[in-house]
Image 1 (cartoon, chains in turn green, blue):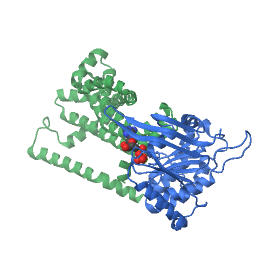
Image 2 (image 1 turned 90 degrees about the horizontal axis):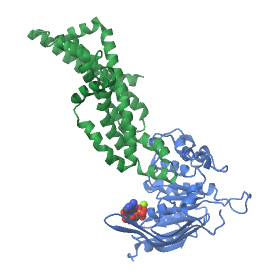
Image 3 (image 1 turned 30 degrees about the horizontal axis):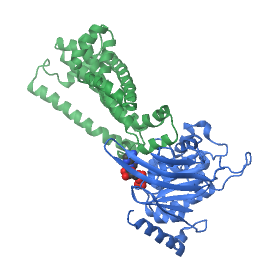
Image 4 (image 1 turned 90 degrees about the vertical axis):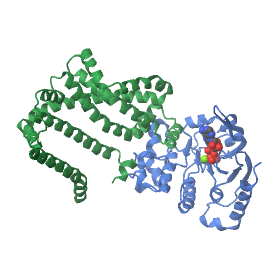
Length: 259
Length: 274
Ligand SMILES: Nc1ncnc2c1ncn2[C@@H]1O[C@H](COP(=O)(O)OP(=O)(O)O)[C@@H](O)[C@H]1O
Ligand SMILES: [Mg+2]
């Protein structure tokens, strides 16, 4: 118990102190140079705005998180299905990978308005943008993961005449888990960005809308508070992913060595 | 079943690895036989085709030419009947599974195949000296212990043929020589194939083992018969029967007959390539 507390302190304290230091510096700098609030608001004003109506941020943040999560699930499911197909056949890989590249290189800012035209102003285009952004990193990592199987274990499964189905569930998928987690740490924040960008274009709710409206009204405290909530959500998700990963991948050397 | 003279019989076996640019002959006209219950060791320098030979016997690789009979039929038949167990140099345990769960893996792959007489995974752990470690994960075990798990796993279906590819090759010398006698103990404890008439529960005393190594003392200590392969392409250079009494002990390794066999094998391995 004492040890976990100490290790928690060792991991949380340094970044927390850095953050507090930066905020304090920012606060004093704004006060000292007497910078107008519409240019840069002091952290105190941002915090005040947040505490003024936390429910407002919770509601909009909740929508954004919801869209990002559904998008992530959708994009990851497609990526996983495709990666399985590609890991099993070079022909599928050759046929489909260029398509995946096209999805990757198309700027999302260009795609978002098109999706809005196609799917209207509801949640669908936001989920789709989040899905598009999370698709490619998951695909590439999953493909690598499904192929990075201990050859000895593969040979042993073959000697047992394991079916492709058994091979996948008992060997390929668990072997790929470290890669899938690495992908999630990239794609979850990306899905959040995707949802915000889509809301920005056509939202009736969500943090993207909040940022858009606050920006138009030169309401910098609201704008910064929304950005802060977004950042905090991203950090929380990463911490949750990290903790899950440590529980699930206790056997993997990357996890074992950091203890 | 179990009524052919040889458990394993290879004739005119040649294997060529062919890719688009070149052909590599790994085995050239190999012939060998193992009778039921025999401990047969194949010894030869690195790259002479020992692993290739074992994979062919186990039905993991089809030879380019020649005849392979396991129990009088193609290797896949034995493989289908779950009558072949494999131990490779890399134990290749699944790191996310406990020791017990690793030993259970074969039974998960094929629920129906475990013979009624086959020992349970728990009994196999007992046999291999792992009973206290059943809930450990592979990364918590030494190399020698991991290899014991691999042996237990290979025995899950109680196969009558055990194929072992340098299973102790990655261990330190002390663990390695101890594991020899552990393996012999396990081999003596586990039964072989059923023999005699239908319905008669007599069992041959031992499993047939085809063991691959490049260690001379290991080959002598373990085997009834040692087959020496020449450097690549592998061909049988000689076969020696080891007529040391059983049970074999570590002390025998210093006796004159043992050292004579060692000299004999060393000379055979040293001879200039044909
Ligand atoms: N899958 C393969 N494709 C091409 N060449 C191979 C393959 N497997 C083995 N070889 C070659 O065949 C020869 C014999 O290999 P191997 O049976 O592993 O030897 P050993 O086990 O005696 O060290 C080596 O030269 C090796 O490079
Ligand atoms: Mg080898």
